[in-house]
Amino acid sequence: MKIPIAKPYLTVEDAQSAYDTILTGWVTQGPRVQELEENFAKYVGSKYAVAVSNCTTALHLCMIVAAIKEGDEVICPSMSFIATANSIKYTGAKPVFAEVDKNYNIDIEHVKKLITSKTKAILIVHQIGMPADIDAFTQLCKEKKLILIEDAACAVGSSYKENKIGYHSDLVCFSFHPRKVITTGDGGMITTGREDYYNRLKLLRQHGMSVNDRVRHTSEKIIFEEHLEVGYNYRMTDIQAAVGIKQLAKLDMIVSERRKIAQHYNSAFKTVSQIEIPQEKEGYFTNYQSYIILIKPNGKISRNEFMQLMMDEGVATRRGVMTTHREPAYKEECVGISLPQSEYYSDNSVVLPLYYPMTKEEIEKVISVVKKIFNF
Ligand SMILES: *Cc1c(COP(=O)(O)O)cnc(C)c1O
Image (tube, rainbow, N blue to C red; front, side, top):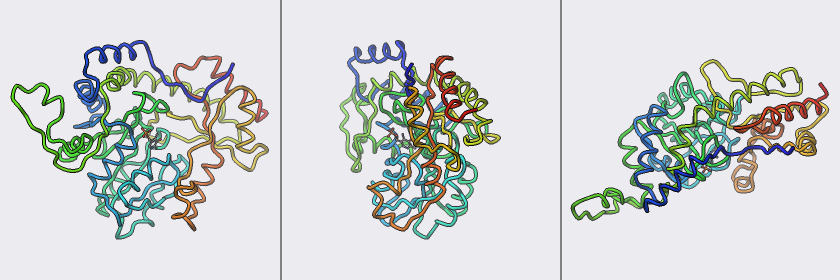
C-alpha cells in the first residue's frame, strides 16, 4: 500500500457539471463564474466575491487596488509559498519579511518592529489553513494606517472567531489549486466588503474593459466597450466555475472529514516527545489543508531521515513550508537577513498525508509507521 501526500476530491458530479457547461457553448467567464461568486460570497459572509485565474493573480490584483507601488514596502512572512512575496514584487514594491510563531503564522511583535514610513500594507497568511490573528492585525493596520491583505490560499473553509475566513477584511485571496481543500484545476477568489474594490477588481481581471462579454452578449442594444485602464487577463473560465460550484457545495463536509483524520493523528502523536503539532487556539478553526508536524532536532532522528524512512515504508511526506528569503530568486536582496524561527520551523517540519476520502487502513498505516520510526 502506497500512500500519497494529497489527492483532490473530485466526483462524477463535478465532471458532469463541466461537461454540461462545455455543451452550452459558453466556456470562458460567464454565468457559471457569476454563480460561483454569488455562492462563495454567501458562504463566507462577504458582500462581494471576484473569481480569478488563481490565488497568485488574486494577490496581484489586491496589491494594485491597495495602490502598492515601487518604493513601497509590504510586510509578509518569509515562511510561505513563494507566490505570497512574488505578488508584492510584481508591483515593484519590496517584501519585508517577518518571523512566524509556533503555528507557522506571521508574528505580530516582529511585524511591529519592521514598520517604517515606507510600509503601505501587511500581507498576512493563514498558513496551511490555520487562521492568523486577524483582529490583532486589523487593529494594528488601523493604528498605523496600513492596508490589510489576507493570503487565504489554503484557508477556504477555515474560520476565525465564529466567521469564515473571507468575512473579516476587505482583500482576502483564496486558491482552488488541487493541493488546496477544494479545486477547480486552477482558480482563485477574492472577497471584499467594499464596492469600490469590487468594481476595480472586476475591471482589472478583464483587460480594464468597461462592459463584460456576458452583458454585451445579452444586451438588446449595441454596446461598445471601453478600456478604462491597463488591465490583465486573469479570468476564471466557466468550465472551472462549473466544477467550483459543485466543490463549494461539498466544502463543509470535506473540512469536517479532514478534521476527523487530523484528530486521529493528534491523539496518536501527542505522546511522542520528539513531535510537536500546531495547536488550534480558542476561536480558531482550521481546515487542515495540510497536516504538519515538527520533528524536534534534538532527538535521534532528523527531519530528512524521517522523510526517507517514511518513503521506505510507502508513505509520502513533504518538507514543511519553505522560506522565501533563502530561495535563489530572493537570496541577493536578502543578504544579511536572518529569520531563525522561520528557518527552524521550515527545516524541521514535515507534512503527512491527509486527504478525503482516506481509508481507515491508510490512516492507521501512517500512524503505525510514525510509531515504528519513533519507537513508541
Ligand atoms: C498555494 C498558495 C498560493 C498560490 O496559489 P495559486 O492558486 O496556485 O496561485 C499563494 N499563497 C499561499 C500561501 C499558497 O499556499
